[in-house]
Length: 376
Image (cartoon, rainbow, N blue to C red; front, side, top):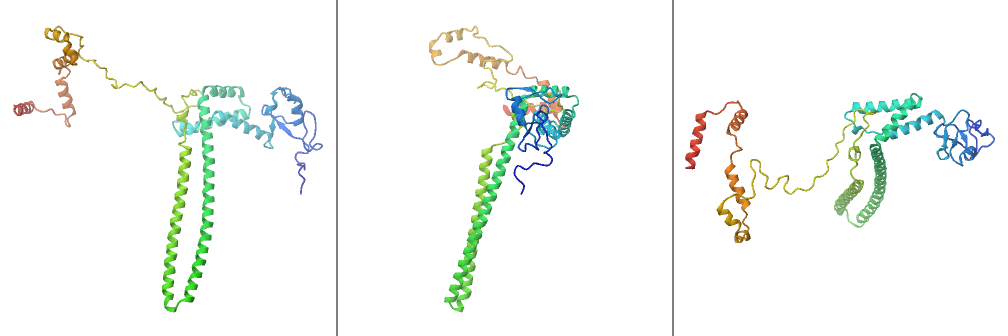
């Protein structure tokens, strides 16, 4: 068995570019990288150079300013793969649009292709300054939608973990129920067999058929009871799933959380999110203005000798009589019908008829005469 501190043959020739220490001489040496430049150096050099604060990279030709808290161990053997994974993670953290935010599947596919082009430019160091400027501008303009999509991703991950735990719990319950059913059925069969043999041994040959029939009935009853127990277990599992769904709640969507977006300069085809209108103050009259007239204006008073006496009579005022109601009713009766235009209504009626044929004047006159006769 290989020792715990055995040296990997691929790593025994690794040398720190700063202190020139080799893993061959120091098997416990750890190499760290910084995502700013991805230059590898030993942990001792990192502690010695960057403990007092940010400093320039000690590798010759590199002028990047590095910080100690960003150093970490290398995950992949190929440093190019390590760098590409970090770039991809950073870009997808910013450009985290979802399919339901686009008008069509084609627009979403164009967005995915555009994101891959941005990643390829950063990986291959093509137009890095321009690409970084576009990413930073997009991140500043769409901070709210980025955070909303991140919250959705966290919610989906949490829901997925809860679903996995629920499925594991259901599988454990099914296994436990199966074991209990097997043990119960085995004990029942053993007890039934012993009872059947005992009764046959103590009874006569004529009772054998009756004993067998009775044993069959007992077996059917136990099978029915077992099925009822299985139904009860299934209902319990369904209730458990329903409780989990109620506790989790309805998952949110990007349109529920994210506000209006302003990333039209970088991403095309985004669906316009309708911002809900602010709730208006409560209006008990539903827009109806009391006392408002369309065809006339009602004054406070009208010169009428009879009404002048009522206006100054305290007995009438104490009874609740309001002259404004009288004015309103009188003016309504006077102006009633002024807003009805018979010729326009007849033209609309003729236009809405199936064949566009108006009724003869004689027919209309006969109908009006019949109505007047009936009224008389």
